[in-house]
Structure formats: structure tokens, C-alpha cells
Amino acid sequence: MEYGASKAALINLTRSLGTRLGRHGIRVNAIAPGVINTAMGARVSQAMRDKLAAACPLGRFGGPEEIASVVDFLVSDDASLITCATIDVNGGM
Image (cartoon, rainbow, N blue to C red; front, top):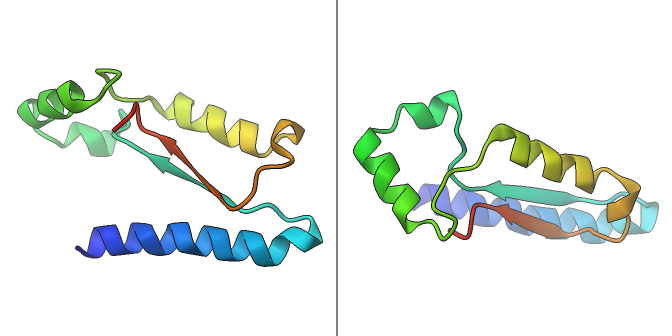
């Protein structure tokens, strides 16, 4: 319950700050990653990892480089009109 509430709070904070700071040319966005192949994810049992991967429409976990590429995009001029957004990078989960 606390985890879900904290995620909802971050999404709301992103929208609030983006709305307030946009007039100053400051964009505020968030990235909501799914299961990413990191040391933290490696602590999850293989059975649970298999179950999560099977539930994912793309059938796999993401890599840190896939999160980094979204960050690169959001800080680029190509994303100059994007603010108040939460970008799901989760393979469809």
C-alpha cells in the first residue's frame, strides 16, 4: 500500500511542479521503470523473475541503457514540448 501511494505521490508531484515551473521554461517529467536488469533485480528468485517476464507483453526485462535512452531523450531539444509527463518504460506491464 505504501509503495503504491508513494508512486502516486511522485506522479502528482511531477504534474504539479511541471505546471508551476513551465512558465519559467523548466520542464518536469518522471520515468516509471518496470523490472530492470540490475543488481537489485538479481536478488529476486528465478521463479519470480520467470513469472514476471511471462506477464510482460514484451516477454523480457529492460536494461539500464533503455532507461538511460529515455533520460537522454527527455533532456534533449527533441522533447522540448514534453512536461508534466510520466513515461512508463516497462515493456507493457
